[in-house]
Amino acid sequence: MDYDFHEQYRVKPGQSVSLAKLPTTTNGPFPKKSHGRAFTAGKVEELRDWQFRLYTQARQSLLIVLQAPDAAGKDGLIRKVLGQMNPQGCRTYPFKVPTAIERAHDFLWRIHQCTPAHGTVAIFNRSHYEDVLVVRVENLVAEKVWRKRYDQINHFEEMLHDSGTKILKIYLHISREEQLRRFEKRLKNPAKHWKLNPSDYTSRADWAAYAEAYEEVFTRCNSERSPWFIIPADRKWYRDAAVAAIVAETFEKMNPQFPEADVDLEQIRHLHQQAEAAIG
Ligand code: AMP
Ligand code: MG
View: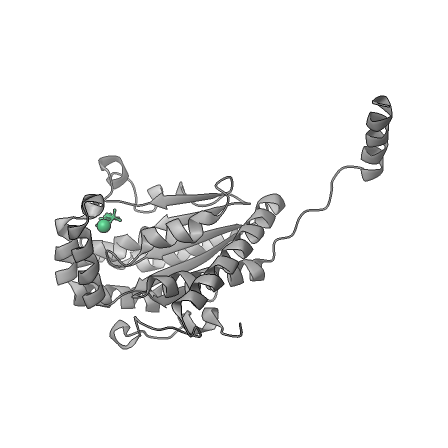
């Protein structure tokens, strides 16, 4: 497949984004849903292979940040695509309303504890960006406090980059109409009632304010080293395909390889022969 998902959906440094003008619905290069699904299945296998190499190499790490409106599909994406990597080297961290202890620290304190060690992948279901999104829209701290956070986030991410962590930031872009359809499905399905929250509807009412807050993030906290991707997410199968492709391409650029043996292979072969001889 020639389609370059990475370039298609990457926010270019310096680019200003108007979310309302970006598509939420597309088939991209796929004639049909079934093609997209088959493509994703292949990409998931690639992700597993890359992740194993990253794990054995143990010299770099990958941080995938997921941000989106409610019901945009972060959980589904993790379940169906990103969570398919080997749990031995991949963990998901959901960030909820900060606890009293978390609030008694700086906003990056809880985040930094979850960044990936060399050889591992971390998936953030929400992130430090909430501290310039919900916090800004709902006036949870003074403007002069959150205003400084864009620079603080950039410095933090730069530091992670210098420590060997590749950062990939993904925004799932859904339409207001599709969000309401998904809320309705949740209401009708008792197995999904636990997901419902009145705050889903209050955030929805602030749609334009959230869009503005996101747009500022895309302008101020986006670079070649720490890029944002805006993924059309009204079609779940397309969201999965596009994200799988982008993560696979990121791994490809990181290019982790199995390390060379750091033991004397001649010695091991000799020991092996002895072990074989011993059983006759
Ligand atoms: P969910 O991801 O749907 O389980 O919901 C988590 C909730 O926690 C969302 O409403 C987020 O906006 C909220 N949340 C996450 N981080 C923060 C934060 N730093 N400050 C305030 N609310 C937050
Ligand atoms: Mg929710």
